[in-house]
Length: 462
Image (cartoon, rainbow, N blue to C red; front, side, top):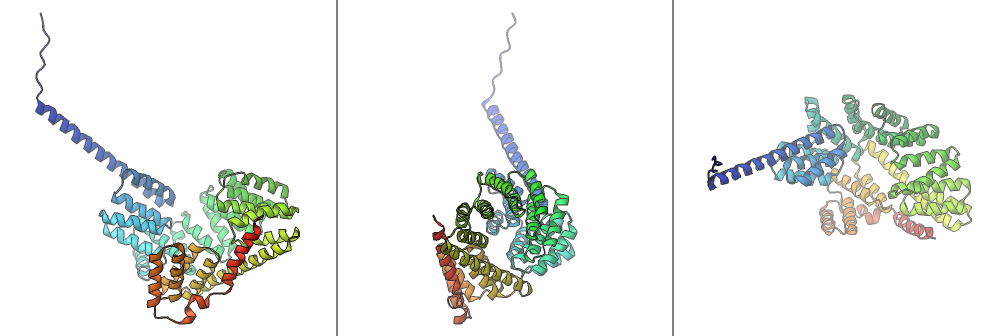
């Protein structure tokens, strides 16, 4: 009778060797797969950056960093994406991590120069970048340089330089969106509405679904008193992006301007039923209040405008409309408070416009930058105030009034180290003139504004 074969004995050494081999294969596979995943995802993020989709690139890279943390190339490209989105502090933090992990020093140096340029610190890098563009650099680097230089020029109110840079960028990449958006924003500030409209239309001719260009085109047409044309743009935008309530608000605004109050009320009531962030809700409430004001519903108008004033107490248009509604409803005392506040805010806005115009001709006027910061701080725009004072110090690092203003602002924010630093720098400053002290040069109306704002908010409460 046949018997089944007796299996041979497998040695313990053989089993150990097989186990070790499988382990090595598994480790190699895992490492190779992770490297491949990182390479593919970083490459996709770089394409998104090249296409101007920095937000998408950032989301991709943050997700990748959560899975494969402490990899220098991920951190480096995170820094690039953050810089493109003007998150300069985050960009520098990621860049420092990438440097510690051994990323190429030339790349690190380039990004630091771009960050400095983006922040308006041109003295050491401007000529280097101009020379680089003339001599020729890779397209990816050229986009970074144009982007940083133009944004830095805008931040420093060197608008002529910014327009020159953006003209070159648009000529080189006629389908690029960002240079046209930046240029249109400058044209808007210069009250060259038709030029801004041309850039928005150029973007939409390439990408008809671009939400920001469509919305700003509508806004520009409203500013030029062309509500019939604006409402057509808002309607196209709302059809393409029904989740963007700004288009529906724009439609209601135009309907009001065209005298279609019933339709405008229906549209704005639909918007106010939605969950909105504070700026969008404030704009919707303002439009709703103005519609009721036009229709003679003064008490309802006051209710809407009071709510808008609580969300945006520094918006002159809100207080102007609220003052009118209060007067027409017979409450002249409260109306006077809001009218005075509206006039003060409008005066500050006009002065800021004058400062910006003067900086176009004389961008190194630190006194104007300091004054702009004072105006912004008095109106509770504290982030913008910090930006103005810091921009003054990039031009004159010893500007004592700006150091003192920053010291006080950081003290108010509860950042004692920064407050003490600027206080010490102010003490070291050569300029110790009493006339340079913000306590002696500030407009006495600043405190009046703050008191008026508080009074208006108390008066606005039912």
